[in-house]
Image (cartoon, rainbow, N blue to C red; front, side, top):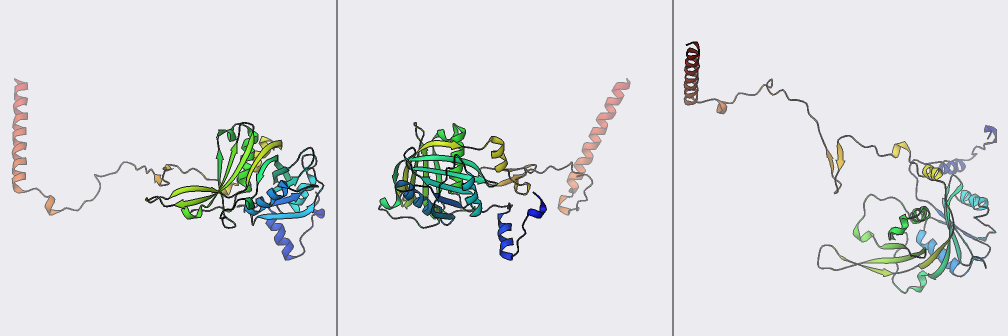
Length: 314
């Protein structure tokens, strides 16, 4: 592209927007864009509303219906995500061929990186659970049950996508009362994905640590995996690449134990103890009796050495 075709910002606000869209050293939490298809009603509409409630406030919603087919031509969807500065998207539609269809995906460099088409087999909305709900903008604890999540590359990418969807700002420390919400994901034998949402209740146990109970608060959904589109290994590795400034370099002779304590090993050279000037202390001096016994020992040793020398000459 020629430099003459690049439009420079004319206002301070425009410059601020362009700077915010540039790659950052520490990326903020990702925003999700919700887009309706040609037909979007029933379980699809309710599922998207509940996902918006779980994702708030990092949400942007387009209320107009869009004639988009992401797996055939994702260019329109890529344009909408770029225009709304969103790195994640959810596209809902329903048709005779694919009823109750939801497509979730993520964007890298204004192009679709990974995209999964999920069919809603069973759905219970949050409003159907007559229980006490949690507060808004609560960071959930994600649980992926079973070893099936690591069996295929598609399931590994889907797990990573779920983590990106519900990821919020990074925190250095948490308190026990701050963990209130759990999202559980399970893969069954028929390759269905079960999503459950629970509220954590802290009960008295008579000990220092409380007793934990889970109360289902919704949404509850059973998804079937239909179509998938994942990036190549090279592109996925490039998308996960970290800048050099944030890479943790291993420090020599330093280690961290299981409790998080940092331990270091120090190497010292040979110490010259003979040349160290020590202070003469009166308490360390020998007494006259000790000096007398030392002289007698020396005389006895000299006599013995002389006797040995005479015996050797004879």
